Image (cartoon, rainbow, N blue to C red; front, side):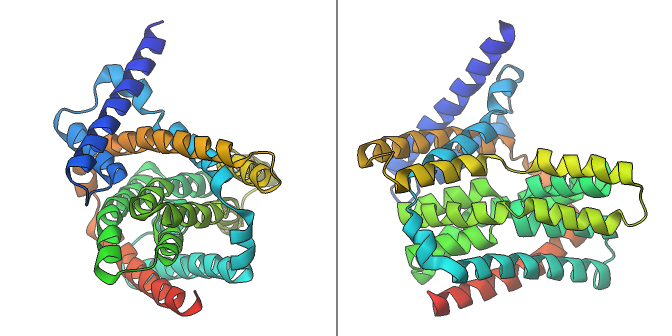
Length: 331
């Protein structure tokens, strides 16, 4: 009974932070409510702190994000993917490959970073943030300090891009579709990419989620590739155990997103239901981003070493700048 009560209280805290974010956005129209919600969460989490009684509920924020993305699938038209076709697929694969290689090369040849830490940084910055760090860490037997450095670096860039990307959109008047695809291709984690996309427009948000999910789906392939590289001298039992780990860490909510997109495309979900699902998705995102803000601890970000940040910064600037230039040409 107590656990259920704490769970409910934690969710109510997320809801209250979300409502405050909406109120701030109404008072400051230039600030989108999702970004405002994250900022309120960061402020509460780093001043008052995350109450013990709210911990269980706050930890559900990833579940709300995944549920919101699944419902969003109903509003993403299949013809958008068909229109983008091979071009979008090549952009996704090319961005991931370049990001992985650039971080690996910088880590190994320009900075004194251990091989496994460099691999975790490459996975986190190229696929899906901390989720990719955890997935690859389990495949290569990385230790806790290596995971902490990589995860801290990813979270730092998640925080920075939440602020910088909307500023770029305003400063350079980037078209909504281009901005959404750019965010989906280059931002590290699903939550920040979704928040930044929808802070611009529904079009930008839907493209950001669509492209980001496509990148996320490569987590299994990437983790498998790293596992094979680091498991060259291990036995068959160890390989079997780590293959199971790859499936456990795969983002299975992607299947729900694709299912609802398919049902909406064939007409099983009509326009009225799509609108209702969009509203429900927005409320779920509000809870998710309130929790995201609460979980961002500035003290932990300050503990991240200089070299991991330098490696990822150089790669990120090169990759994001190149991708934006290419998008302006091909779209």
